[in-house]
Length: 452
Image (tube, rainbow, N blue to C red; front, top):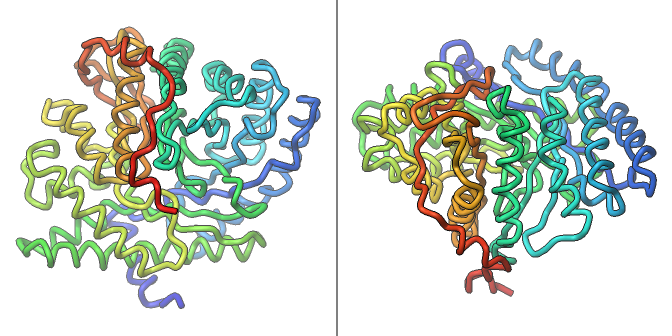
């Protein structure tokens, strides 16, 4: 049962500590929209999504008004598009992307996710054609987000797919070069992708999900930071307890909104994702939480340990607050979207190598990182392979959202505006991994994947 007193106490955090619901995302199955005729499929997709989600935005806005809880984004996620387009050409897939974009505009939502494929063990023809279409699709749409799952602990790593990702990201950067390569900010590469994630760019509606569900992503780095500051110089056991109790309250608020939206829309409640999602706003930073724990600057020695404590305590508090916690759930460290991360990266305190170490204990991976525009495809693929290996070896989700900043070098910056923020262009090793990437094939699954 939800304790109203807890909720009211949590609402007091809204005005001063940047507490918000980051997204209410409606997941919609498109499996019944498949057709041999891509034009017919595009019409079916448009009609089904606009019909199913017609009341999403006004309903969420009404909940926001009634409860006084800021709800920042309203989004839709759909079945991975490659699963419904078996016979389509690359051009047909691009038209589907345009249809999804029109759908988002009609509904007034912020983003629509699911333009992607699951290729952790191999490709279908549809997968290959959709992946080839992604750069053009992202450059020709404004609200469509895309993801590709290239690995899992059970399957290992599809290195042919990893090699394709480097080429895809470079082409996407080039096609959107006049807008600071923003297309790359709408694309993410995963290992062990969750099928109920409400956060973009990686949200999609998994094949094991119901016809339609409501998933909610909460946030509150500022609340956690304030709680740590009030706790003073306590020991780590006490600090973990403070974070756990704070995460509990935040998650309760998320569950309230999720259940209310579910009831009003007549759609099943899926999960609450309790990830601490930062923004560029002052006081809403995961990096600042780590510094509040006692680090001089995020990126120095001790950062990984501090992040591990934070991530674990957030998860423990969240699972006590809701029976249906899912998605990613933990702490996000997107460089461009976190004021503290931006400052640390700009000063040189935070490097890509340190970020990679941090991803072994956090919820996502190398997220919203800008690198020099002349970074080669092979280096980008190898960066992805390194990060994906962490996820596979540790049976956790990891991801890469990297932006080769066309025409820019280390020390420059790119700006996307809004929640996407701005990213300092970070230096990256240029030592060639070309021979390694060219091997292709699959890196086998680790031995601990054999659990049956």
